[in-house]
Image (cartoon, rainbow, N blue to C red; front, side):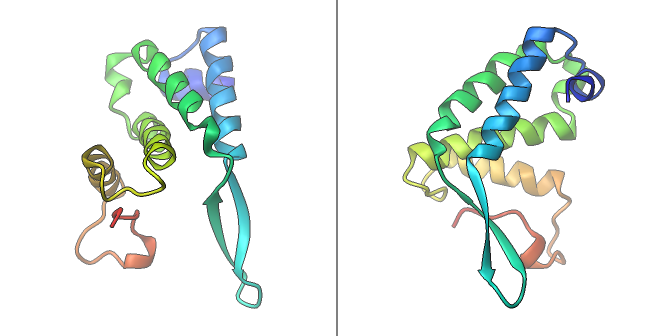
Length: 130
């Protein structure tokens, strides 16, 4: 992961890399995988133990200035930032996104990054927070 952070985000500082690894571990710990319908094999990730969301957001926000300007708007970095901020909004806003203008802006950006169009099937679209 440290090599990935260096290559993808231009972050070569060992302490910053360690913090990003920790943020990713915390992100993973906040979600559990569970079957919605045992016979269909459909999986869903649900947030649990979201108390890590403020720490994740803090790590991502403190690392953001270390990302070189040309990479700060890269698809992969923006996905990390969006994920951290949406999890924080969910945690602090009673797991509701529709009441947050910031969440709506982030979801719109996520749709742009994901190349969502009017022809995109709903089942593969990012959530619209409604």
